[in-house]
Image (cartoon, rainbow, N blue to C red; front, side, top):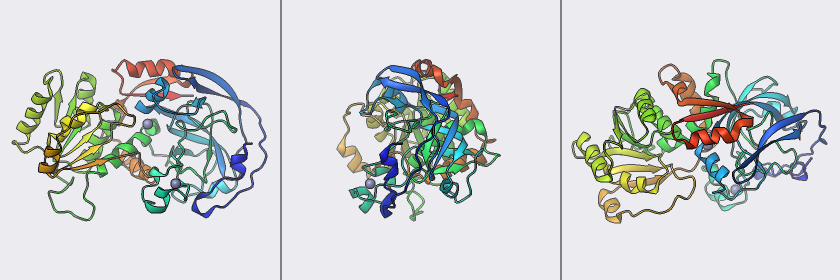
Length: 402
Ligand SMILES: [Zn+2]
Ligand SMILES: [Zn+2]
């Protein structure tokens, strides 16, 4: 087993843990991104977990925009890599100490269905962000993410969920046990809902319920883009008592889904093809004022410049659509200044956001048609085909199963 596990940094307390030597039993298959645009199914020896780890069988794994960028080679990542970070899994083997490390404090056993926060939850404790901004652990300079930034070259290899097995060091990654009533098929939405609900919460004004500052019950929210994140932002807004939900979308199936999920009005980009026409329409709907808050979930730079012009004076704008650099856009600093607009970026989520996500998916599973978002399912060995399906633009959430 890799030495880095034997001398791992266990958070700010620097507890070094002895690990047992690995004993390999069977082989497991995984879809490996060996280089940009090339995925191969490869066999790996199934590892035995050390004291603090589990080996789990992915139940379902979603494919997201980040996976597309990884596939295309747009991000600087360590090849070869097993993709897959939006997953739930069933615990197959568990180390003795891992049993007590479930994120909510319950005991973890083999057979439990779990949701795994892909980003490391025990931050390094030594970088600037860990020392100065500890309430945003996702900013840690040494953060590692399963399925994104951990190569499968190093043992125990299984660091992504497009696979029959995944290895999780529970002392470094949060693992949430899911109740039996959790709708199993929504497993692929836990991570995206954590991203979406955290972005949505960026539009709140914590501790200052002044009525018209930030989101609150009865407020108007605009969501640009009805992809998975946009739809989940709409769901979170509806659950939280939005007065009016507006959406902007081009693809008909997604517009329909936005309406089903709770959008009061979807502005169809085919009907309103220019920025000016869309802005005019948003202003018409809001009596010339603009929306209280808007969230950018498209991922095209132009949407940012456009969205700012749709927020009312004193409103809030959240940017969550650009996990990769898609270029630059012209904005009017005057519009931001005169509008007294607050603009927030939203990068990932703290690991605890998974609890919010699990609650929103579980409690409102009969109110919000989450399942309609899951449009296509493939076997993980067909990962390339699944990625092509997303590229076609008609799918919403594509999932893989072992
Ligand atoms: Zn994702
Ligand atoms: Zn750090």
